[in-house]
Image (cartoon, rainbow, N blue to C red; front, side):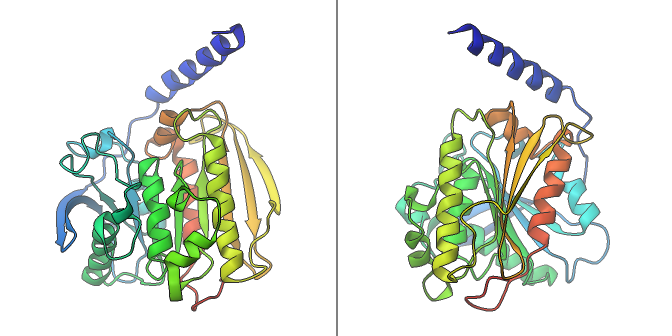
Length: 311
């Protein structure tokens, strides 16, 4: 290992240590439930913010592989704080260890890349059941996830564009691991439309590297332009650097991709000096809560548009 690599490793270890001793996690009330349909059974945690839930948005978050929040119950999942602040219901589906020993969502299996089958059908079923039970706002239903969860978000964004108004496939993979947007359009079928998407990819991710994240972004922008020509810019329309501050332990670069139709179709966030596991922590613990707020600000800014329209 070269000296520069040793220095970089030392910096990353120091950051990891700082994150692990950060502020105490949120201790919100989270209920455990289970859901079954023809595709199978998965349990999930549910957090409902104060007040009547009717008319509130819904956020569904998919964990990564062997996620400590997935068992035996989530602790310190700070997105519950954001849910209370912004007023949305939060669901956290859990992968069954019988389906994957490492508790990874099986995003790369063919049956999980199609509508009405496998894990996407179960997650969509949980989503629809919650919308109906709590009379949530059908126009403001969102899906996000990290790593294997992020790749599964890509699958559901392509196969259920009529259910989720916007998605966040973070540290995930392109749909069917292809480069072209046509694969997404084919999966959407008659429901095809531009899909607003929030991407997060740590700069030194050793599992889902930055090139994969860029490819994921490019595929979705290409699909947006196939669904509504001219709706998505190929290059960022603006960019910024966010410096260290409360709820933001490392600097970020944020690229914005605004549509000439009047909304932001994509946002690409890159935490600097961070790798894969640190990225997961930034999305789930108090020390990264400002990133989580940015995520939800992006998603909540979008409502389900009329068919084939951008926003």
